[in-house]
Length: 94
Image 1: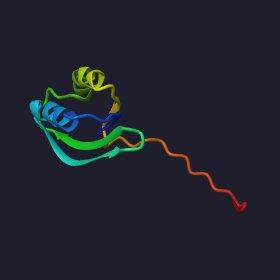
Image 2: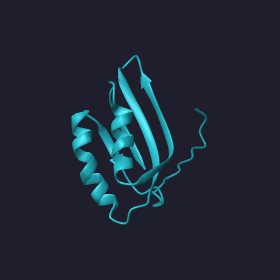
Image 3: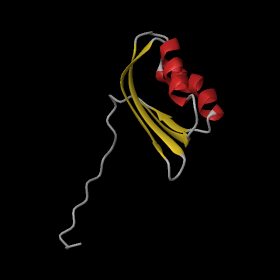
Image 4: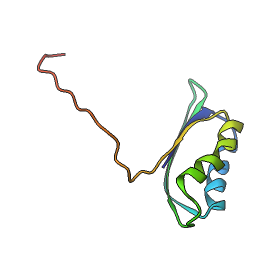
């Protein structure tokens, strides 16, 4: 899974999709939008890895120059790994 935000400009979706396609990754879900008030672009891409050499670490290292070129704040992680969650409940009315 890849999540990112950056200043909105032409070519972001192409750069991300091209990067994944070049590494034989199959995009299974992609959602993106631009916020005209802030001029920021947001994207979330779920993808599968078909090539055995396309490890998470290799993908992260390979994507870093694209992230830098577009001024992205990004994360790439294994969506199958469950994150830690804390649920808090209050009895008080808010």
